[in-house]
Structure formats: structure tokens, C-alpha cells
Length: 502
Image (tube, rainbow, N blue to C red; front, side, top):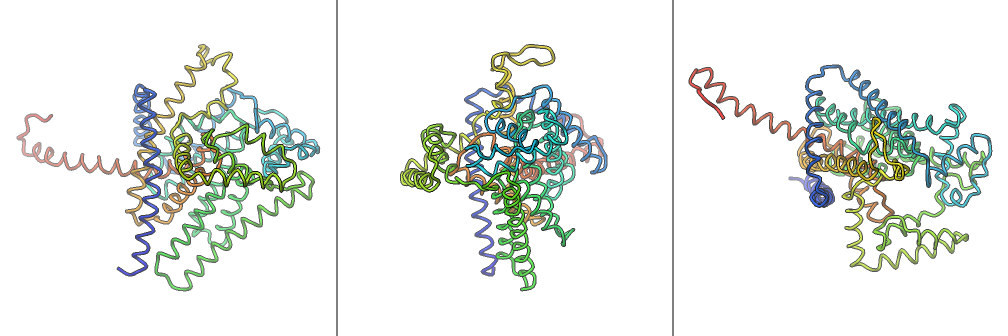
């Protein structure tokens, strides 16, 4: 074995071990939560749902494009029903977005003088997007949510298209339906969040990057443009940028290629990064010129997320004390110095830092999905009305969280199998590596910055895709077993000497 092949094997093992450590910790933690919260009763309805979806996939024989259209329509209708039925009033950051968008739609950009938008200039992107929709559709919050439901449905279709590149058509359809009925995909459907449009644009960019060979001239341009626009809506593209660049470098380093091919790949990286930077910086400059925000789309306080994320008292979740202590400082230089002082102090405590990182993984990835609070907390006092029947709020939340947790654990176990089998397959290996790098980068990033369970929706998209590989492995195993078991039986029947079989 040559040195390059040895190096490739070492890199693959490092990636595999790193991902399995994260995934293993999360899967075990979720299993503990599953036991402690006595979620066993919810296994039955989830198994029934999963079985029915698998049967539907086996029975429905339609062309891929018709299936994609069907998934889009069904996902949109179901999410829109939730958005209409539970028309959640915007709160916190989402209220800021909507109020600012109302002003911007009328040409009033005074919102940018607000302390919130001075610090977090990047939020001007989603405000501008909502302002444009308000100009077209009017000021109805529900109308904005319905548009968001279109993006949720579109995301479901793109997930299906990407899964097609890694698994069989049948398994791709199955994972698309699993994601469609995944409870957490409904939790934020009624919330005026910036996650939906951002997730769709970034995932679409990833898909175009994967198939860029089919459109070599425009593939990189379209991919980088979509990811840049998605990042303007919500700044989460850094994870994908690192993964895409890393996957290309992985291919260059670990494969023996001619100089011409390596140069082509390097040009691909350079083009991707240049287009991404030009679009994001160009839009930021445009925001300044128009007068939407003097800071453009800049985050003038990036250290804030690290201060919050390294707070051991809140396990890296939001800290009102940290927020009050730092955002009240008007001088940016003094504020950054104070933030850096806190960060260094918290990083210096090596023992507790390690404990904090483990706790953060458990809170972020293993706890009950409290993003339900964003979608339904306004019903705490009145209870929930379901088909005319009054249901206590706590009972409703417990039910949907337990259903989500059961679904969630199933997908994580399948993803672990998917990781194991993915490193053994040669077809579309670089696509698989891209998703592995997204998982590792995301897990690592949230080890340091502020966490909220609602942030995991982006990561879950890629976990579902990798889980499709695990599901395919399980299906192949049982199919093989059935075939092997049935051969002796068929032989005995043909000989006419079988009397009984248990």
C-alpha cells in the first residue's frame, strides 16, 4: 500500500472515529432519556407509522418526479394546516423581525438604530426578506408563515433528491416520508422563524454542489449563490462551507491524480469561495448603501455566542446575566475586551470545560425537544383544542415530545449504521464525506457557542440523509436472510416432503 493510500485510510479512520464518538454519545444519552422518561408506550404508534410508510413506499409505483411533487404537496398542506390552526404570535427575536419588516416595507429604516440591530446587523437580511413579502402579500403574519411552509415542503423534496445520490430510490422515498412525518418538522411550522428559508436555500446549494458535474459551468456559481443567500437569512452556512472545502481537499490529498485534475479541483474551491464572499459582502454593502443598516449584514459582536456557549452555569444555553453584562456596554472595543476576558477565564478551567462540553452535547442533542415552546407556549393558559376536544397543555406537549423522541432515537440508530456502512462504500463516497464533515463541524461548533434545541433542525436534515444508508443496510440484511431462509423451504416444497414449519 502506497503512502497516499495509507494517509487516506488514516484520515478516513479519524473521521469515522470522531463522528462515531459524537453520534455514539448522543445515541446512548438519548436511550437513557428514553428510559428515564418512560417513553416505551410511544414505540407502538411510531412503529405503526414507520411500517405504514414503508408499505406505502413498496406499494406506490410512480415516477420519481411525481413522487417529488406528491411529497411537496403533502408536506406543504400538513405544515400549512399547523401554521393556520396554531397561528403562533411572534415573540423574542421573531417579534423584532416582524416589527422591523413592517417599518422597512413602508420605507422606514429607523429599526436599524435599535440596539438589537446595531449589534446583530446580519438580522437585517431576514427583515428585508419579510419586508419584500409584506409589500407583495400585505402585513398578515399568517401569509408570511404560509410562504415559510412552501420552503419547508421544498426542503423535504431536496432531502429526497440528495438521498437518491446515496441510496436506492426506494430508500430515498422512505426517508423523505419519514422526514415529512417527523414530529419536530411540525414544531416550528407556525413560528415566524428565519430557519425555514435558510435551511431550504443552503440545502439546495448543497444539492447543486453534489450534481455540479452535470452543469459544470454554472454548478459552482449556483451552489455558492444559494448557500450565500441562505446564510444571509440565517448565519449557519459556515458549517457547510467548511465541509464542502474539506471534502474537495480530502479528494485532492487522498487520491493520486494528475496535475491537471488537481488544478481543476483547486479552481473549484477558489471559485466557490470567491462567489460566496462576493455575494455576502456585496449584499452587506448594498444594505449599507440603501440605508437599511449602517453596519450592513455584519455581526458586530461575534464573541457573544462564545461567552454564552462557555457559561457552565447555564450549560451553554442563553444567559440573561451574560447578556445584561455585555450588551449594556456601548463601546465596542471595551465590550470585546470584556467578552474576551470572560472567554479566557472559562477556557482556562480545563477540567470543567470538558464536563461542560459533554453536558452541552446532552442538552443540545439528547434532551426533549423544547422547540415546542416556540410554537405552542402561548396556549399554556387556555389548553390545546384538537378536533374540538380540549387537551391540557402539558399533556399535549408531553405527547408530541415523546413521539418526537421515539422517532429521533430511531433515526439516530439508523444514522450510526449509515456511518459504519458509508465508509465501506465506494459509490458517491465524496458526497458521504461532505455530510460527515457537516456533522463533525456542527457538533464541534456547538461545543463552543450558545446552544438551543431548536438549532438542531439543520443538523437533523443531514442525519436523516445518512440514516437512509443505515435503513438500506438493515433492509438488505433482512432481504438476504429471507432469501436464504426461503431457499430450503422452496426446495422442500418442490420435493413435496414438507409437513410443518414454525
